[in-house]
Length: 122
Image 1 (tube, rainbow, N blue to C red):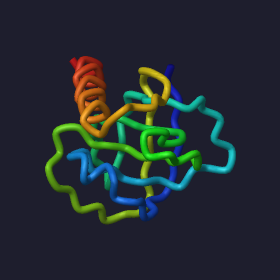
Image 2: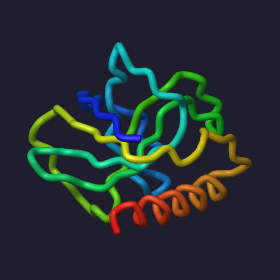
Image 3: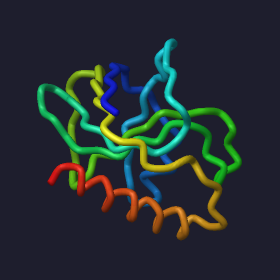
Image 4: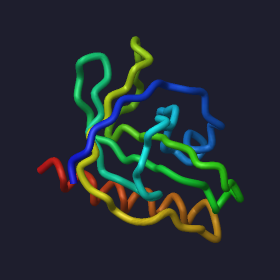
């Protein structure tokens, strides 16, 4: 599956950062037709390509039914984004959005997702 879209940064709730996985929150495009879930992606920011994990959908662990679209850049400590435009290339669908009993279970799953996504780039 290779699909591409462009979006713009928006302000998020900051939850992913507290879990140790800071994300770039994106405006959901009007014609967005992906199924909810976790994806392996490549992200183009300011002319540089990064490997990332993308979440699209609600956040049942936090009782949020409102959909969000966010990308965690893998193995990037700090990044200063100059341009608000973000280009995303979806490479693989990993799994559906799940409800976790605790934040620790969610963190463990995110770590597993990142490990699976890293295998995409090798």
